[in-house]
Length: 443
Image (tube, rainbow, N blue to C red; front, side, top):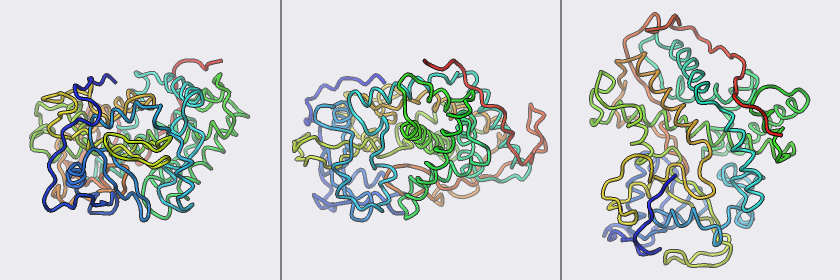
């Protein structure tokens, strides 16, 4: 990602004047229905406290949240002051905390630095590089058409449960060689670990169980899938390391892609700036996706870092091992964008939805391709889609990390057969063809 160099020194960015009704050091919770329904009002109040503010991410669990654009860029690139290893912080967190399935240490690229990070990251990057775009697009289009056929004859549907959540599931299970019977366990594990509930730990444990069985099977019976290629990588991952990289790829790929598709569809169906798009307007799926990546990125608050020692960062004192999160949503929507020097932000060259620095998202292109293809397929097949409820009635999944509608009810003219295809409506199944991955294994 090419980020513009800021013209101001670290910590010198303009800070909005505090709202008289906002206490200067208020600890705001980033969980519960209040935050989920209106996160941007929380971000405005947090920005008034400075570039970093104290927040709650679960009962009894605090974090410092970076809301300033330039501070976020500086943090994400600073490998000297900060570490990604959470183990010092984790010592003070209850073992049953609902945030540990997301933030707790595991031997993966996400929670490591230096040479260890480079080893894991190379294995992940090389494995993902085997996904050939033209095959991925064809596979997503095929799965999309069959998912649409499952509900197109009814005239109503839930675009989250019946489409946005299921489409990445089928892509991931086929790419990694997951047995069809384990697909629902994968999606329950990935979705459950992101929710601030008592079942988060159990959801992650079940996800690990499925992938552990998969890795053991591929050690014994290699196939033509990403799991086999990861195991054959010169990095020489042991079984647990391989399991953890795969669960990381799935959790970092499935839920955010689901959220990106859902958020973009909601924007297209409800935002007056897209008026008429689904009925032949000029706006494109790419513009809707870009809009969402700026304002409502699928992972709104993440990028966990921990100071290696007591330090001062952008004028704020931080303790060694203290949890510092980046609000990609707050940083992207900072106004005026004094830190970036941009009068108008457009395109994808400056937003932080994919993070930046050594831990930037390695799956940006596949995720964008999946989301774009999914939206194009849906809007071309069901061209008179409209929301079945007022936009204000949409419920959002609670939690500090993601921005995601829980449901997206729609109505449309029922179809007997999908236009331009021979796929009958209400086919009620998605055919699991053989996993198709391009390239050859390393080593």
